Structure formats: structure tokens, C-alpha cells
Length: 182
Length: 379
Image (tube, rainbow over the protein chains, first blue to last red):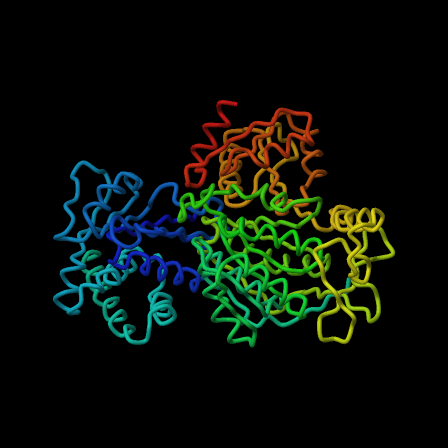
């Protein structure tokens, strides 16, 4: 079971949680990892709480859904409240949307405030790109997939019309991540 | 049975496919060039991909008015010479049962993928279940056999759909892939090979298409338009397809043969996998998504020095009676976890002398490791 990373992306339906999970998983495959990914399906994927889960492993994954989370990305307060306690104590990491999510102070989990929606609106003039800003920050901080792989994943799964916006969002997210690291 | 190795129409490599997408690609690799279906959650992505891929490879895709028409079109296409399939979920699978009986009795190769959801009836359309296992075998009337396979990963959605076509062509029998919502929607790393082995139905000019010298033989299958005199009927028929609805010997011979052609070849058809059963005292018998939970739990309890192992049923029908019986002789207890009220557990009890416990869950969710571990501790 060593070498397994469990990642949960969460937010409202419509924020691009499912696409972000697809891109992250696809990038993992490009990097040569064994990936198992699943996401909300049905009504919840289109409105209320929505999640996308990706397991990264060096070998075949036994149970393909999350048993705990190493990393949580919370794009909404509801998602944060619902999932923050599943994140591993001490070693876990939570990235939350600064300005939209108020984190709890009693959790012994490292938190990073990423102003993804804010930056997405101000710098990209499109709040729909916040999911990819988060991906950029996540990748920069955790190196869970390579930048090359995630760029390739965007080119495979995102329509041509939105590729440049998403690649830019990724760069912006990585810049935010670098600031966090520093 | 002659087979050939062919180049796969999709580039070799590692992909991130959902189970439904992988199954579509497995079908194309097997040579499927006809799909008729009616979209239904949670199988629809399979149909969507077939719509795209059949156009690319020069096949025929048609959305029918319902599932009865879908399976009927598939049967017609098969008799016109195509490898043909449909995919559905519980409600559609119910509608197809009459024609599945027709396909079994007319010995029509076809593949049906059932991406099971939480039933009965319309049930919970977007939620997982595994309640169609008995229906796959017993859904149509009369004595007949089908083959049903049970994938546990995206990779096996590819591999077992390919195998379903091969078995269907080899034995001229409706073959089902009994997936479920959790596997259909699970995205995983899958490997598409450069070449795959495929089997085609046997053809022999002038030979009876509905009889065989062997009591368990599979007759050759001509297609309409090849010049053979061909009549296909769901009534009892002789070797050349003439209706014999009053002849006891013809009926007995035909019913016996369509059952024996599967049951007598079950050692070739049935595939199972076992994990850590050498010294096991407790064993899980498991299939589909739940086998993933089971493997996780077996490995975890092994670390706590439990003598536990598992047998995974990759084939559900014909039922892996020998593998189950052998396991039953070695272990003290068997637990069958499943997302229904004990459909396979009941089957297991027919073949083993030891205690068989049943973990049943019908809440529209997968069986999670903690639930399975808790059940095992209580045993």
C-alpha cells in the first residue's frame, strides 16, 4: 500500500471539479502511474456538492475509491465542511478557496489558502477557470504529476476553444503555488 | 475453433478510460461493427462512444425506439453476418429478456452489456447495484444457457467485452458482460495491446445450421445473403430450421444440445482467480466491483495474521461450480459479499459443505472495506 496518494477535489457542481479530476488522473496516466478515478454522478454533479476522486499508485490499485484523503481541494464551504475530517492528520494537506471557504482552526492538517476564484476573475476574466488554477497550485506544491503531463492532459480533454485559457489558468495557479512554497 | 490475431483499431498504449469507454473499445477490437441500443443510465457513455467509433471504423450504429427493438436489431444484424451488441441497464435488460431467449434458441451470437444499477424497477438510476445476476441466467423462459462475465476494472471492461464476443461467436450463444455502475464509471489506467486474438463463427457450406453430429456440438452459421437456404425461427426446428413443433425427439434433441454445448465446455468457458487461499481458513467468494473491496480487505487482514483468501468469479454463468466446490473443501467458512440480497451466495451453497455467510447490501452504494471487515470480525 506504500506509494499511494488519495486526492479529493470538491466543490459545487458547475465549478469544474469533475474536469479537474479527469485532467489530474489523465496526467497521472501520462506520468506512468496506476490511476483509479471516480466522481459524482447524477444530479449532484450538476448543482449541489460535487466531488472527484483520484488515487495515484505505483502498482495496481486494490480498492478504487478513497478510504482516506492525503489531499483535499475544497472550492466551496459545503464541500470543505463535508470532507475536511477525512483528510489524514499531520501528513494531509487541504487547499481551499480563499475568500469563499473559512477553514476550521482545530484540525491538525496543513492548510493552504489559494485565492483561485478571485485570481481567476481578476487575471483571467473568467471565474470558470478557478478549477484549473487550483490544479496548477496543487501540482506546484505537491508535484503529484508533472507540468508536462498536465499540459498534455488539457490538450487531450479540453476543447480547442478553451485550451489557451486553461493553459494560462494552469500557469497562474502554478505561480500561486510557488508563492505558497516560498 | 480457429482464431486469428488482428491489429487493434485503436493505437496501442496506456489510456485513462472509464469502464464504459473501455468496453466500447474492447467491442471494436473484437470486430463488433453493429450497435443498436437505447440510452440508459448508467450505461450511456458506452453507447456514446460506440456512436463515434463505429462511424470511424465503418460500422453501423442505430438508436432504436426501445430496448426490445435494440436487441431484436442486434439479432438481425448477427444473422446478416455482423458481430453485434447492445448495452443497457436493469430496466432495459428486463425488456430484452424475451429476445435473449430467442437468441439462445436460434443460437445467435450477440453481446449484451448490462451496467447494473440499483433495482428493482426504475430503482435508483444513478446508483450502483448487482441485482441482475440471476436474471442474466433465468430471465427468459424454458431451459437454455447463456454465458455471463463479471469485470472488476476498466481494464477488464475491455478484456472481457472482447472475450464475450469470442465466446459468443465460438458457442453461438448470447453472452453478457455483467458490469455495474461503479465499474462503468470508474476511470483507470488501461493498456490497449497492439494485437488481439479473435474468434469468428464457423461456416460450412451446405451443412445444417441448427444441428450437429455431437450431442454438445456448435453448428456452422451461415448468414443471409450467402446463398445458403436459411430459415430462422424461435419455434422448435430441425437442423435446417424447419419448424417441428409437434416432434418430441426433435425438441428434446435441440433443447439438450443448446444446454450441453455450453455446460460440457464450461472448463474452457469459466475463468476464476484466487488470491492467498493456500492456507486460508476463511474465504471470500466475490465478483464485480465488490471483488476490489474484497482484495483490499484480504490483504489488510493478512497483515493482522488472518488466514483469509478469496476466489474471484470472472465468469458467473455457467457457474464456476468446480472452483467453488474445491474451495469449500479447504476452508471452514465462506463469505459472499454482494450488492444484492444474496444471489450468488445461494448458488455457492449448492456446491459447498462448509458454512456460507452472506453480506448483502442494497442501498445503492458500493460495499466499503470497513463494512466488509466488520462483517468478517463478527463471523
